[in-house]
Image 1 (cartoon, rainbow, N blue to C red):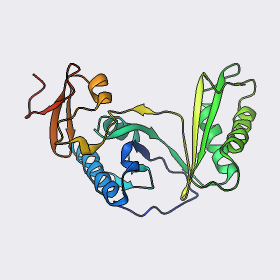
Image 2 (image 1 turned 135 degrees about the vertical axis):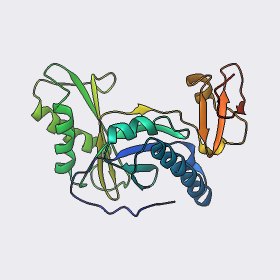
Image 3 (image 1 turned 120 degrees about the vertical axis):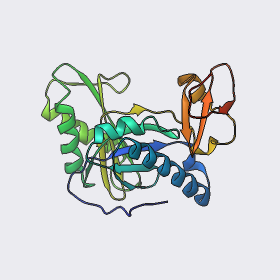
Image 4 (image 1 turned 120 degrees about the horizontal axis):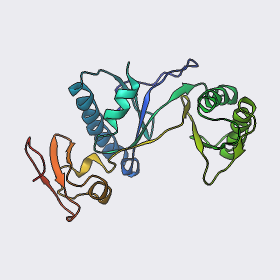
Length: 228
C-alpha cells in the first residue's frame, strides 16, 4: 500500500529506510495488506512522539521522510515488524553520484590504515554487476581516503549501496529492530527473534499489545501495564 508515489530525483535526500522480512515473500494482495498494517504502526509510533512524516514504499522497503531523521530512526527501530533501520542518502543511479555519496559518508569515518568494504546490490540486473559496482565505488572511497585496506570479511567500516528503480540509496549503518511480521498480532505466537532479543518487553503490533517471555513460545495480550 503506497502512501505516496515515489518520484525519482537527482537531488540528495535523507530518508529513514525500514526493512521488513517475510512480508516480501507473501502474495501481492497479502503483502500490500501487511505493509499497510506496518505503515499504520510506524505512523502511530511517530505521531505519539509528536513527529510527522511522509511515507513511500518502493518494493521491499519503507522510506520515511521527516525533519528529524535521527529521532525517526530511533523510534521506527522499536516497531514490531521492522527488521532494521538506516538513514540513507538518495542519489541518482549513475556510478558517479553513488560513488560521491559513498565517499562523503566514508571520509567522515575512515582514516588511513583502516579497512573497509562496499556492499552493493541492484534491483535490476542490467549494466554493471553488483561486484563491478562495488569495485568502482570502492575505488572512489580509496581515492578520497588513501591508505585504506579492503577487507570483505571483517572490515572496520562498511558502506551499503542499493541501485533501485527510482535512484540510489547509500548508507553506512543498520540499526537492529524487533523483526518478525506485523501479521503475528492476534496469533499468540511469539517469534523466536522477538522472544530471544526482547524478553519481557511489551510490543505493539496492529493495535495489539503482547508480552513475550524467553521461557515461552507464546505471547499473551496485555493491557496498558507492563509484563507480569
